[in-house]
Image (cartoon, rainbow, N blue to C red; front, side, top):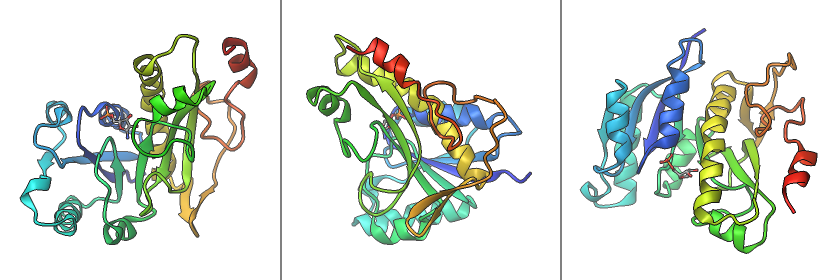
Length: 235
Ligand code: GRF
C-alpha cells in the first residue's frame, strides 16, 4: 500500500488536524500527513503539529497583495510537499476558484452541520434557532462555492434538551474527530471519488467492522444512524 501524501490547511486551534494526525500515526492508515500549512502565524494548531513531528509552515495572508497571490503561494507549498490530498481543517478563508479547480477531487473539508443545511459560520446557533432535533457534521469535496461540494460522509448527533451553542458544538466536535479520519480514509483508498460533480462510492464490504460506530454514516451498505434511538432521546 502506498500512503497518500496529505497536507492539512488550518487557521486555528487544530483539533480536527490533531485527530487526522493521530489516525495517520497508524502505519496501516492509507494517508500520511506530510505537512500542515496555516494562514495565521498564531494558530494554536501549529505547535501541536510540530510537537507531533509534522512539518509546519505559515503562509500568512498579510504577506500577499491579493487572494490570488496568497493561494498561489499555498499551491507552491503544496506542490513542494508532494501533496496528493489536501484536507481543510478549520481553514477559515474562502479559496479562489483557480486554486479550487486545480485541486478539485483531491481537496476535502469538514463543516459542522448536515449540509446542505447551515452553510457558513454560526451553524450551531442557527440550528438551535431553527429548532433542529438532529444536527451534525459533513465532510465534502471542495468546490468554488462555500460548503457546497459533493458529500463524502456525514455524522448525525441529537440536539438535547437544554443545549446551548457550547454544548451542541462540543458534541458535534467529538463527532467531527471521528468522522474526518473515516472520510479521509475513504478518499485515500479511492472508495469515495469525485466524478461529474458528484461522489462515486465503491469498494465497500460489510464485514461488520463498525469503525465509525453508531453516529457516522459513511457506509452506503449500512444504516448506522439509529433513528429510533434518536427519537427516544429527543423530545
Ligand atoms: C470545526 O468545527 C470545523 O468543522 C470547522 O471549523 C472548526 C475547526 O475547529 N470547519 P478545529 O480547528 O479543527 O478545532
